[in-house]
Image (cartoon, rainbow, N blue to C red; front, side):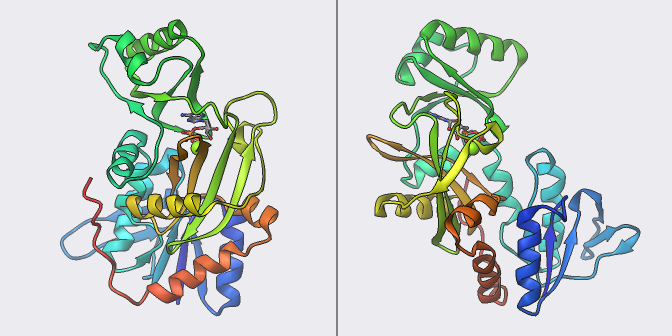
Length: 301
Ligand SMILES: Nc1ncnc2c1ncn2[C@@H]1O[C@H](COP(=O)(O)OP(=O)(O)O)[C@@H](O)[C@H]1O
Ligand SMILES: [Mg+2]
């Protein structure tokens, strides 16, 4: 098969591993910097250009779209879809997953455990918002944050209200969320490929930060999921329409709570600390599914 990895960094661990594995299995692989692609849109003729040349058609693509390039990147993914390429993540699903509130609504509807989340305009009674989210301490997070930037822990009701007021003044889109105190500073990332969890790690913040993102200095180690956690991760991936993804969860006294589903999760720490070969699972998934007709998006939100 001809496979394109849509990535801005050809030296990125995940990109390198996917390329290596796909090539060793006899595929032709090109790393395409989607940020440098340009496209022409006209009736019945979807063309993609890259460095002055027309990009020849691919059988399959693996989109690894950065958060800050969501709009441009998913437009390029859509163009590949229009050419009939199989994709490990559809443009619709990637877009959807980049909006946290929309993701929570979809997951809640599909019976996925999430922390109770409140979304309101500045016309609301701020005390009531705090109450609805379960009272302080609580989490305030912006709708499109990433790597832990844009997530605030408000320890008191007063702090929560001050943060909300500041966000409203700046016109920032945010949510107020129940704080999962039981496992603060620790979260679990489960890598799901084709309806199976292929590796799972626990990330722990190094200092007393409540955020466990590796970009905030969190470290990862292998973790065994409970059957309930495994089912929840698979359910979240299915709800979001992302067959290849990283599901972030926290352990709470009320079962696993999903924080987000990542369409371009890194496989580096999961492969290194669990010894699992995630890249091969992803390429196998493509081999088994690329020939079938693309499934219609049925998420409906
Ligand atoms: N409701 C919550 N309760 C406790 N900790 C949270 C909660 N939401 C987020 N966190 C912590 O903050 C980190 C970042 O939050 P997340 O929603 O995943 O945003 P980002 O997209 O920036 O990674 C999580 O990995 C977790 O450690
Ligand atoms: Mg996260």
